[in-house]
Amino acid sequence: MGIRIFEKLLTLLFDIIAINVAFFATAWLRYASGLFPEAYNPHIDFSSYFNPVLLLWNAMWLLLFFFNGLYREWHKESRLDEFIVIARAVLFGTLLICLLTSAQQIIDLVHTGNLGVFFTRTKIAALLSYAGCMLFFATASRFTIHSFLPLLFSRGIGVSKVLIVGANDSGERLVKEIHAYAKLGYRVAGFIDDDGRKRGILVGGYRVLGTYSDLPSIVKRERIPAIIVAHVSDSANEIMKVLNYCGDITVTVYMVPSLIDVITGHLKTHQVFGIPLLVLLQDHMPGWEAQIKRLMDITVSLGVLTLGAPVWLLVAAIIRLTSPGPVVYSQLRVGQNGKNFTMYKFRSMYQDAEKRSGPAWASENDPRITPVGRFIRKTRLDEIPQFFNVLKGEMSLVGPRPERPFFVEQLKLEIPWYVRRIKMKPGITGWAQVKHKYDASIEDVKQKVMYDLYYFENMSIKLDIKIILRTFLVVFTGKGAH
Image (cartoon, rainbow, N blue to C red; front, side):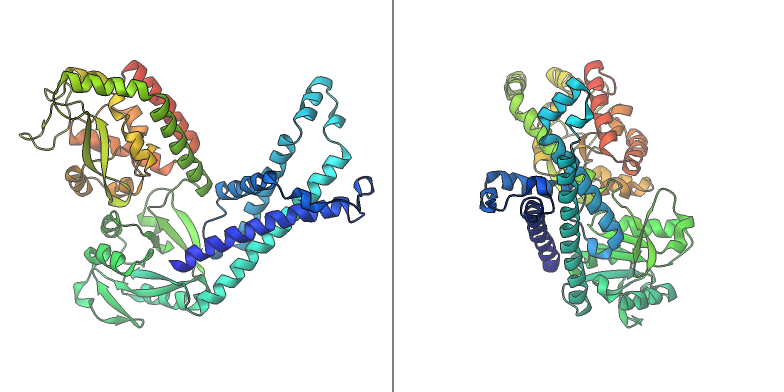
């Protein structure tokens, strides 16, 4: 894990160096090299550029790289693919700089309709030279890092463990591929096989550590970030058995492509160990969109909690005055990767409502709900304290609703692919919430899971915004809530 953090910090440092070298290289080319006679200035003072604006300049580029997914583990991917992403970020950044530094010219362009006001030869030359310098130095710095890391990995420094599911011929072939591609930074930790008689035997030089049920404990104990499912069976149920044990752990699940015919859905293929491997339980949202999604979560949550504070205090006072008990109700829920967290809501039920009934879903005329509780549930005001969960990173604005551990254990047994739902970060609202009513039974939850799986396969900022807009419609019309 240490080498991964080192890689990211080193990449960040090299990016800062590349951004500044590109800036001053462009300034030198324009003003001191003599290549641009109209801008030549042999007495230019480059030290004058060291000011707070340069810090903002660096911050802008780093954010652009961040949102374009340039801080993921690129050493495992194609240099050409990385170059294309860098080029996309540089192109967008150059256009953004052009707009930010040309406000007056844009106004003149709109007023006169004369493109020559905006696209001057000097400006075009400056932008092209800067874009070229940025692309060259950003690419060179990153390629240098990603050429250095494989040398460390080939010497066993900073490698990640990988667990192979399937102690068979397919598993042995995978071991050979991993050895052949040592520069990718993986090392076999052992095998998992559902045949308990194989426990402890050596396959391809590595021991069988346990059966499918041992996966969670082995992954956590050995700190294994990825497992590869070899060809264990032609049955989809066999794959489901493996995935169900992976629902409560943070691990990347790969599968050999020969099993594509037993899986439905859109599965992304990665070139790993020289062969294409399918990624199961993957997050379908691109890295840069995921970062924007998190930024939206933080921004909206802070806005709702601060700007609406007087209203939330009034709601809290009304709850406190109309029924005994705490204003905010906390409850254990299952979050992303099966990790439990405490979720907060404005209390809408009478105190200790479930002491006699035990865990149960709310019904349309539930006697446990207070008169005030009916109103705040209908308007979704009871969900407001969950914006604290969003700020903490336990929830998102949009995602499947978090269930209680009691119900999750039932649903994992009854609903195929429920494990996919657990892999997502839960949300305050979601596709299921705007398409279906409140949960009144396990059958309602089963129906909602289908909507949640649709969201899982189609996650995007566009869909999130659509869901948020529909949520406002639900709140104002009362649709979808009892």
